[in-house]
Length: 404
Image (cartoon, rainbow, N blue to C red; front, top):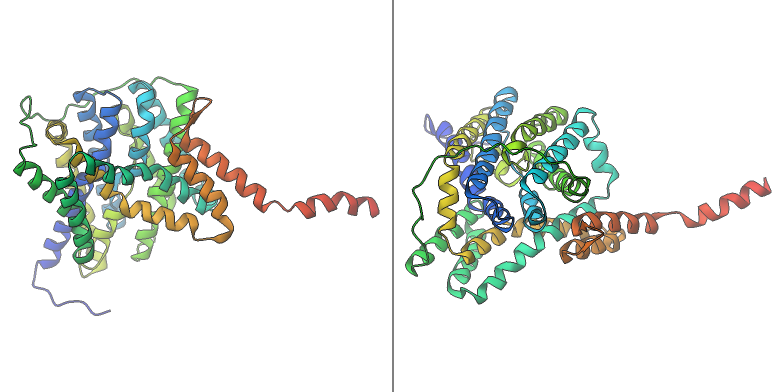
């Protein structure tokens, strides 16, 4: 492979800038889902600030440690599909029940990693059904982009057109461009309000867990599944595609441990990044693959700085128009929705179970106290089992035994 001839120091600067861009992309899109979930659940500003600080701190410390240990650009982030799941489910639970579910999800993921069952579980569950569940969870957010056109057509349309153009010219910076254009239009229209109080540093808030079987089944289990399928699998795939074959047991275990420690402060999960990991693992981050770990360390440090400003972020986002938040979060998930749909319907033999899972999950229904994501997985697995069960062999086996 031929590398570009660079001036001395360019590699370090490009690696550091890649880490900064990864953090900016994370906060410009996926973090909006956290604010939406907190708003829907009527969480206080202090609890929301603690949540933001915890996921930023957890992402920073995990990326720092793993990047330094393995000399690889390991980028940690919070679960984007997990945050999307919380928007619809979290309003039904108290903060203590949510924290208990976060702890259970982290323990489940950690157990799978420690026992070496992570790869086996991913092979056992049909990939099409997992992709369909992920697409179903995110579908609502993508559709809301066009619903938001009714309330603010100028700003949403400007953001949408910017997204299309940026995806064509500079895909890496598409969401950042959408964020800036949306802010510019909102500011020009006088839609940005002044903060109601002074900006403040993040204040971690300890939440005592409240254990509930209902929350464990309806929140913890889907949260763990979407984290595994939507973050761990693609995150590890990005690393391996870039030539960094890290031990999955150590990577999964480290993220699960930090998730467990950050859960009482409101963090719903720290996972390997996928989209932002691609920013730091390519040649643009550093021409020498052995030096790209600098981008991972820089990303971790910028995350730690962002954790200090959790309180300020809460106040700033409360000043922005709702249409901007809805459009930004939806556009940030377009790529994830497309990947989910592609994986769901790629196999012709799996299309019916995948379609059932997708439609059921996207419906947002609730039955027997369980949410759509839970029933989507159950229905998809049952449909898969029925379609792939060898009926003829099962019916003929007793006859063959009698004749013998």
